[in-house]
Amino acid sequence: MDGLRWKLTSRPQKTSFDPTVAPSIPPRQIENGRLRVTLVNHSTVLLQRNGKNILTDPVWSERVSPLSWAGPRRRRAPGVHLDQLPDIHLVLLSHNHYDHLDLTSLREIQRRWQPALVVPLGDEHFLRAQGFQNMHGLDWDQQATVDGTAVHSVPALHFSARGLFDRNKTLWCGYMIDNEIYFAADTGFGGHFQAIRDHFGPPRLALLPIGAYLPRWFMSPVHMGPDDAVRAHQILQARTSIAIHHGTFQLADDGIDTPKRELARHLEEAGIDASIFRTLANGEYAEC
Image 1 (tube, rainbow, N blue to C red):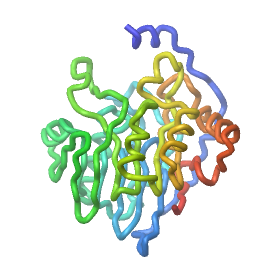
Image 2 (cartoon, helix red, strand yellow):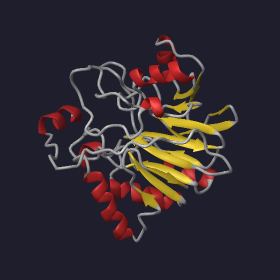
Image 3 (cartoon, one colour):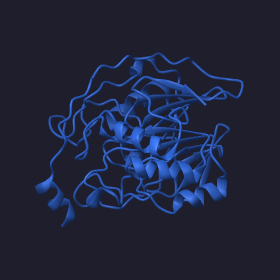
C-alpha cells in the first residue's frame, strides 16, 4: 500500500522558517469592479468583489485532524483573525479533508453570518447532519447561482476521505466564480487545466496549490508541485495567479517554505514575473 510505504519512509524536511505573521483587517466590502484577494492561510482565501465576501476552505483551527491533540499542527497563525472578517456571504468547500473542511471554523462562521455553502456532491449530507443549512451540493460541471454570484464546479485530480472507510464516497472539485476567478483547490496536474481554459477563457485570477508535494512518487497524482503550478498558470493564461496550500501546515515531506522558494525558482526559469504569479504571506492581500 503506497500510503503505508510513504509513512514508513517519510523524511519530512526540517528547514528553518520565520513564523511571524502580520495580521491584516480587510475592508467591509469592495465595489466598482475591483477584486481584492487576502490569503488568510493554507487554502483559506478571502475574495472581495461587487459588495460580496467569499471564503474558500476556511480553516482557523490549531490542528487539521480528527483529534484535537494529534495530527498536523499550525506553524503560522492565520493572517486575519476570525472576529475581524467582514460579513461573509458565501463559503466554497472543495472537499472533505480536515485541512479544507474544518467543522470548528465552519460552525463559528455559520453562527456569525449564516452564509450559503457550496460543496462537492455528497458533502451536503454530511454537513446537514452536523446542523448546517443553506447548502448547494454540486457535481462536476454543475452550477449554482447564490445571491447573484455564479459558482461552477470544475474537475480536480484528488480524492476524499475523513476516516478509514469513506474514501471517495463524496466528490472533490475546484470552482470557477462568475467565469473569472478559478479556485483550483487540491489537485494534481492534468488535462483539466486546458479544458477549463477552453471552456471559460483565461481567468482574471487563478488560485493554484503549490505545497504538500513531496515525495513526488506518492504525491504527484493528487498534489501539484511548484513546477506543475507554473505549467498550470501558463496553460490557463491567467492574468494573475496566487499560490495557495502552503506555508501554514506541514502535510508532506516538503518544508514549510520549500514550496515558496521552489516556485520562485521555477518562475525565474520560465521567465514569469513574480508580480503575475504571486506568493502572499498570511494576511497579505493583492488587488487583481
